Length: 444
Image 1 (cartoon, helix red, strand yellow):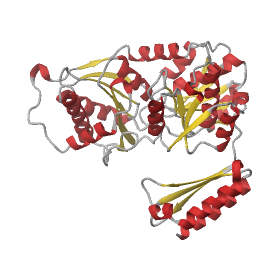
Image 2 (image 1 turned 90 degrees about the vertical axis):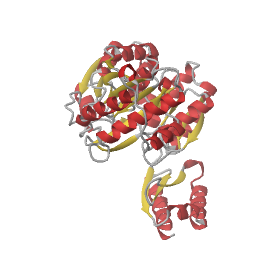
Image 3 (image 1 turned 135 degrees about the vertical axis):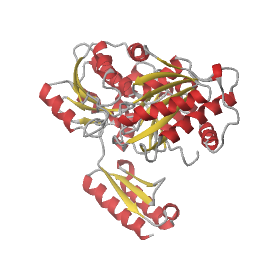
Image 4 (image 1 turned 90 degrees about the horizontal axis):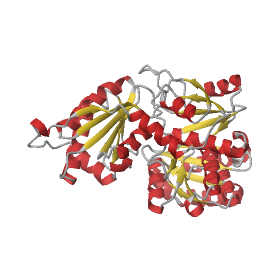
């Protein structure tokens, strides 16, 4: 990939880093690259966004860029990122465009592109698009060849029907509180859960363009915990701004993280005969307690680098059915091409309904080991990673912990930082080993 695209599209401070001019050029370049790859038909693009105020401005720029290159555009309005991915495939579009910065604060925004079928755009296509930004097309389409814009009035309904078909289990008798982060799922998430039969209490579901992720959502669970306790609900679900992930809290207000969600979903799919190869994909950041739980359940774990892009790559390469991250991104490949927080929440509640067990019982499959994470600023993260002294210290700590803990050193991909992560039997032991390793790393 080039310098423009990150692991999740292009992000920045809206109207400063991510300007309308850049959005227009990026969309225009994407359409021109697609036309160059397949000139047999006029490209169709699906464009959606979260409710950030800057999304209105950037959406106009993206639509102009696409249409000026000759692509027709379907605007689906404010919908979750996974809805846009689904709709890209459902409408037979050549590209999907989402304007969202996910869980980031309101001043930020981003542009994420999906390929035909709603899959992540290949790295080589992203590189082509980036290279195209420095060149001007000699001949632009005119007349009837210019792209046309139309709305997609059935977009939300199409996505809701897809969710209902993907998880047809009745949720009658379940009461949940859903925190929509004043984001893209503020309308469709409560509606999806009600249609499934659940009793739904909503919080943070009144987006005004400025309040997205502002003290609410999956990165701020305090309000959800209070609401679950005060209403006596069976569980709470927290989405982020674009609803590509979810975290949960049980009836007592205890947080259920992505590892626990992934584990209970893996067992549910295994029991239904739908977990391919009896294998689940997780990243290196998944707690060792997750690995212990999966081993006890007879489920193999395929481990990837941190980032949902790597989880997706492994799922596709190995033709597996389930993967996810500790942060709450979970991918069910039978029904989605990317993480979908609404689909994940429906699977959680379906498991509760099927088993008659509480979320606390289901989540208890994972006994999390105490974890310590220390970020160590260094002068050369590559040298630290290659240091024999550091390697020897890590090996010694790993031997000390045995199967009851682990050590992970990860150089930052963007800063001169090395992240030291230790899991151990007790918090004291975890803290002690992490601090000792951090001092060794800092001294290199």
